[in-house]
Amino acid sequence: MKKILIVMVLTGLIQSLNGQMQEAVEKIRDDFNLMGLSVAAVCDGKVTGTYHAGLRDFERNLPVNADTKYRIASISKFVMTTAMMQLYDRKLLDLDEDVSTYLGFSLRNPAHPDKPITVRMLLLHTGSLNEGRGYDGFLMATYNNVSYPPKFSELLVPGGKYYTEDMWRKEAPGEYYTYCNANFGLAGTIIERITGQRFEDYLQQTLFIPLDITGSYIPEGVTDINNLAVIYRGEEGKWVPQTDNYKGVMTSPRDFSGYVTGTNAAVFSPQGGLRISAAELARVMILHLNKGKYEGKRIVSAKSIRLMHKPQWIYNGTNGDSDGGRPGNRGLSVDVLPGLVPGDPLPKGSHMIGHTGSAYGLNSAFFFDPKGKYGFVFMMNGSFDGPARDSSAIFFKFEEALLKALAENSAMPCK
Image (cartoon, rainbow, N blue to C red; front, side):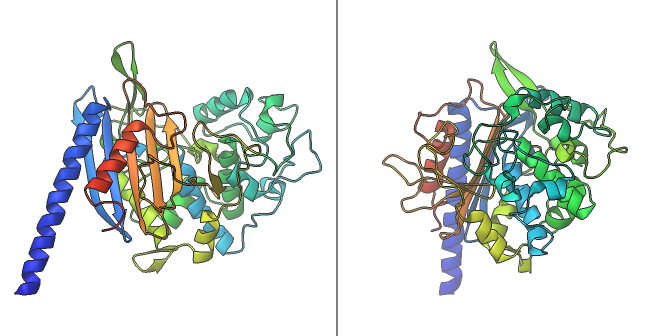
């Protein structure tokens, strides 16, 4: 009887705290003038709560719910690398191999033709690639003709149709960190050339199906398109859709039928196109917290998980860009947050790693403490005035408010 009473008390306490957290999420959505917001809290390898507020579609007045998917932008890179490490586990991928070996053409910084660019460098953003003037045109040509996209050599090799000299930095490969989305189009293409599978099919088979994730790197792959969040910006006093405004119907799906595997996997947007719900993304976090296992099943080796988490580019003040915040170090597609300073909203003693996303008006965050075995997922599909943060802050102010609410409601760290 005593045990039953204890369970009842604990259950009531959890329900009360979850209710308070839901109220906090709704208030933060209103206070910061956000379109829609989803939050997931993970503790001790389990999702302990998901919270949602606002709208996924302003025009149709459709609310965010537990199954709403967001285009999470650059957190997609972290998810892709998790799946890619299975090739490392199978000894099909050498992180320190010249990428030219996999790509089928010679990829070299013209200023450093004798210095190979490795797979590890792509995943660390240290391969000396830059998002130059030619990149946008190349990407638009890729997205607008997914059956016959241009080859990456046309972007990165002198003389190519989209090549511009500023696609390369002056520093040699391995010397300098600069964030470049093209690294992950190349990495996705390497996956295809090793496996003979299309990027989307490989991710579904190796990661999404085992984790019971219904997300997709392309909108055409989202089965419930009506529950995909539209991404907005506030412009001239009104909300303006930026992307994923399908109004519940995929009226003109792109035709991938002519695509040749290993040509240009950027057609699948490995650098930023993943559509996924907060709860589903939390499963990827649980996989990492459990050192490569999910519900007892081994998906990625513990060695690969440790390798992803390990800082492999160390910021020294001059060897890389700061990305607009207080810079930390980098693992394989992983941000290793810097040490805490007074006023930081993270728990004292935390050692957070993960990734952020930002595109078209969306902001997302995915961070966890592997030692404490807790973490959080934030997804927001529009801020009317644009998200604000202090110059030295790691997180936006609405995210800081969410972190404070998680702490106040015993959702972080684990209680």
